[in-house]
Image (tube, rainbow, N blue to C red; front, side, top):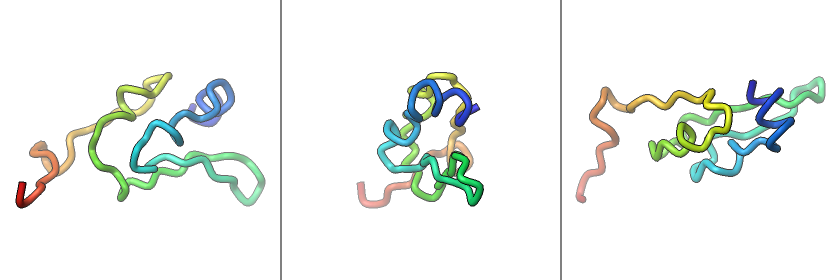
Length: 73
């Protein structure tokens, strides 16, 4: 759905609304687009769940429900 609808109709907003660059469209060896997810970049802001036009991204709470642990704050 991200390639057929979000990329074709909305020019792939996933690659722009995520502040951490988690979502990017890359070309396969066959020249087709695919959505690559770089989960290690996620800052748990939940923007993807809110901004996705087709609501096909389901954000889940990280680290067992406690959220990120920022020491020293």
